Length: 166
Image (cartoon, rainbow, N blue to C red; front, side, top):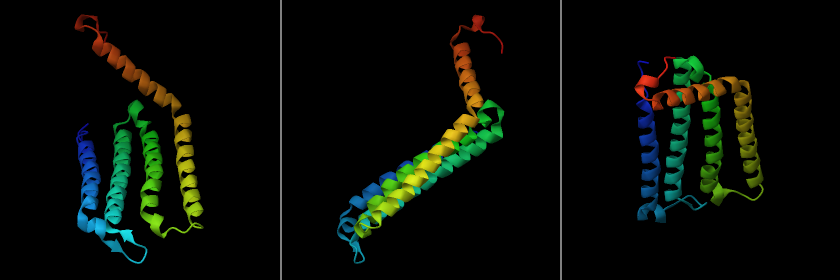
């Protein structure tokens, strides 16, 4: 495997920094006291929305790249690529609801809130059904990957003279 797995830490560092920087900037007095437009959306809320949305996009991009790399590596772990992508998609869609709702609450009319709720309910259900389908269709590969992982841990915990060649 020429590419390595170090790139994951880069994504995680940027995601954490985006969340921290968004919180720090939103807490500064100029951002707290400034509002945007007649809807009175706070500038701090806008900064947090941008930071959290960016973190969610990066999380999904991390899941996509991880999925592609698993597929490229092949073997039993290659079958898990669709499961990883479906799981990350479910997490991102469920988290995006809270991020979006916190930002649009000041401009959200009571008639529009159920529409937003149902859009996310449908999105979350679709992602959950996709995850269940992938788990069902790739269950043999998942069981094989978990079994080979457990076997390799058992082999590595044995003393060197008791190890059996695979």
